[in-house]
Image (cartoon, rainbow, N blue to C red; front, side):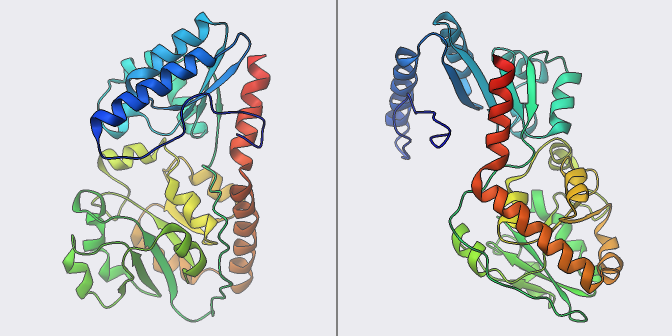
Length: 316
């Protein structure tokens, strides 16, 4: 945003564990921002802003400014703290809403949001790190990477996976102590937690896996439902590290992955051995080239910049 000429009118971002201090710091930041607003300003808000979102939009309009909201998460899906009706009402206070992707945009429209909208597509990833050069040897097992915290409520599908790990190895970057049974599987290689920048520069893999739930045959439960409308940061993380993506065919980003040729979409984990076996050396090389192109866009903030420019044009 600074590169696009925006400036922060609140206080500098801070982190802390003292909840009382953070509460008053955030409140002071909101009040400062409102005081700084001028008629004709365009205010960008990250959504959710919890209790302050509607208030900030109201005060901005009172001062003759307009607001646009970039959605990171929908509370009615993620934490179930809001009903769908309340979330739509809250978002309607903004003059323009940037949904995570086209599927989320359609979902919001179908549930009654009439505010002008655009779609981000992918969350950008502006790390200065550079992925290492990695070359897969055709005929050798593919290295499929899964990065993230492990928990039964989100990753139970792993317990059913071993019989279908054929022609590939699963490399897991995260704490495996919560699922000790996985450590006994010979095709599961644990690397432990790695900081994001180190992961980008050092991961040696062929694909990044995006899958949630307790089933091999589709992403299930609340995680699966959210994947149908959400753009996981994990997708951008993998692409930024130079990894093509394996994702559920019903996921909101599946059409984008297929259209750009930067991975494969599957209905079931059971399909993986055959799908991987059908990838030729030329197909895989072309896929990696396309991933590098998208990774450059992510590092430059291209998706965010386009979304903001569209919002500004529409708000005029």
